[in-house]
Length: 594
Image (cartoon, rainbow, N blue to C red; front, top):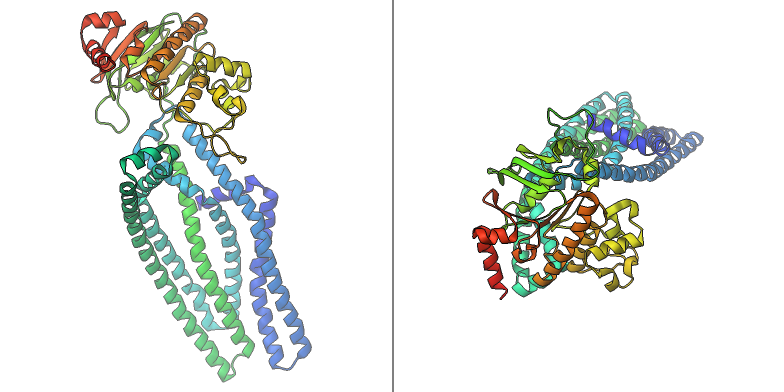
């Protein structure tokens, strides 16, 4: 009932006029169908008695009822289909808001949460069916009441039919429960099969799949996942079918017995031929209404479940954590960094993980400095960046910005004073101008600002695109677009990161992974120049994450992470003299390039 009321409120808020029209038309349909049955009975009795004028009048009434039923149903569909589309768009918007209404990333990065997100995305696309079912169900309810009343008046034996009609509805609920369990059990295989489908149809994967001969192997894995998912769904469908068949069989048996009794009384002369016709038509209508009600009940249950799952997603998305000593009014970030950013005894464990990825990290990123974070894959480099951007909160310890706990700062204001290019960068299918310009939304269409940002990123990508900054990127555009290469997308992402002029924190997380070592080194030198500008403008800290040690030599500070913590800190020369982990890894990489 809660889900039904929620769906009604959603639909009513979209378009009250169309909803009112749809409800009125569905009510007209509900009344016209039983009225037509009564008119048909009277037509039959009049014809049997030889009353031609009365028969003609009732024949006209039957025609009017049939036309009214069809017309009302047709135009009601037009009205509520439009509202249903708006409801789907609204729930999609709600999911977007829920997914992005938190500063944290755990609901994106935990597999169990990702499964729920994928499930609710699929089910919300069918929420429009729920609105259709709701309106049709309301019409059916009115029709069932009228049909029941007419059956009761027509013959005592027909009273049992509405009672028996409850059995298919109850069986339908059991059937839907079996289907729900089957869908949930098949979620993981379905998600993996879809991933394999995307992988085998993505242009970026095509070369590697062909070269390595993986197509057939991945097709087999795809088929295996779908076979397992289909087997579970088939068992669910079979169980659901048996429940539905049992409910309908009981109703059909009662239907046959009731009609036999009515026909017997007609043969005896206790009731007229019109009553037999009425009983047949009403019982047939009731059978149709019961079957429709069972389907509608399933759709309503499914829609209710979809709305509940949207609420579940709301619950699993983490709310911002406010420490007990936080001020009532969040603190604004400093206009200029004077001390820098300090991580004080920071320990962090990813949600669902058994071991911390960082333990008791204590280090200082001085204001105006260029900091390089290096280490082997999985050492915790990106995790440090996520904590600095407050995508996660430390389990223990604190991150201080000029001595103020990062959790005390106004989050939106802090994010407005940071910028980043991540290794898993976004690929917004916009014009090249906007794909870069959204890095500083107020100046998104400022060509000078966009070109300056690309120049800071040492990128001439706009000059290589067919229409320059006006080039439409991707294939989602109605008039077609340009498929940019991976390197071009990465250069656009770097340009986007360079749009903000005076950030307090600039992060480039493996920003040049698509470039060769020499190109990355040139980029880093340019990046150091940009960092000097940032330092002069805002005292900002520039953090460069890389697995290539040769490109970070010019950094003011190099942080080597590994084994869950900071292993070494210093300049390149200091760390080489230390002859520790950095020196060993640097030497290994340097030898590989000789």
